Image (cartoon, rainbow, N blue to C red; front, side, top):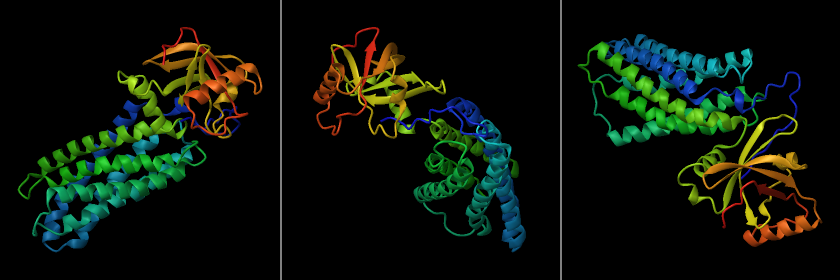
Length: 353
């Protein structure tokens, strides 16, 4: 349960950002909420304006209006998100981000909403549950396509661009049902201003959901995957006892970059302290920062505490003892001989396990 560490000095033109470059969660939520409020207001106004035209067989004009409303939504979202990502993306990449968002989100939303608008007021309404299920399916589909397009823009800029696809699939599966509920609530007798006002509120709610979910994923593009960050959050929460026996959080500083690295990892304990054996050490290189004894922080029993960590030399008595401790605690973990073993000593003795 560790992560791949790109612990090297940045070179000229290297735009791979670290965790500190990502926008704050609250700013990202605010940007997405504002963008969707603008977009859904425009989409609601377009739908209301297009409906009577479609009923009078001016289908082409109605379709143009609906598509225009969808494009406004895509432009608003693309511009707002690209501004939020100014520290992660170059200016050229931010333009590409906006274009990709307009094409996928704007035209995709217009394509999804056009059939219901152009169908007129006749026909039976589908069951509410069916509408929600369809909204979730559409959201996941559109989220996958949009996330894939935006992930291409992220390539070369962040360490893990593919995680953005999962972020959008998850986020739009939540946001799209909110949009569908807001879009299908107004009846034929609603006044235009009421429809537009509901569109604004719907956009704010959908944008907040979109920003919250994708914002949680943003730091994972350059660091820990979401599930590891979730584990750290649990270890620091009042329910830390669910995981304390098996896992701890470890924080250290990169020797070359000076960045703070935090990760969850399995451990074993004995009278000499704690033992950590990095899994898949060829890919997860955080342990190389402990070739010399270095300060670390350990998250155990719901709180961070200071300590010291060092990499043990294979064949030494301390190495053999630590490896024995770890094998006794985790007998099913294979192929430990000769691999890296880290000994951690806390300033305060750990509680018995």
